[in-house]
Length: 154
Image (cartoon, rainbow, N blue to C red; front, top):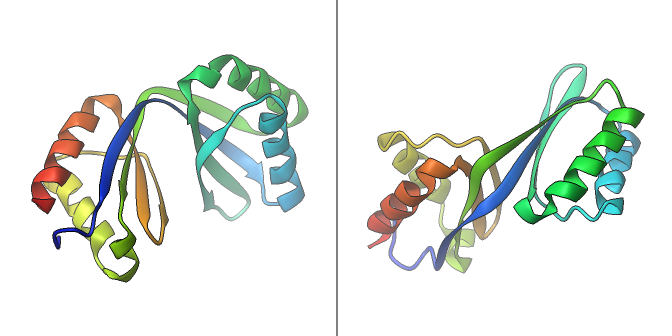
């Protein structure tokens, strides 16, 4: 990876990952779910979705500090939408790599995936923008991932 492409590499180990399965493929339905989390004061960070034939799977992250509000929101979503299966995962963290130069530099994600693969670092969620990539990893892999990415850019 070219030097200077990544200007920020950091991790947040106080994260909860939420996975919702069997979400109806309807924007109003999805909006209602996220309004519920908002109403309970859950500040959602990463959001990703997978389209299946009949339904969606939506993953998101929030801060550990929101556990109480998250539990209340999940209960309300379960009450209002019993078809949805909701799972929460603790002991995860978010690793972010960022740099303005990523906008014009192809292959940054490929290099990070290669670093993870070469070092047996699994991830459970990834989101991107033009200038950043965020990964959800089990907490036990965060330090190793940070170390290996930093080695690759030095």
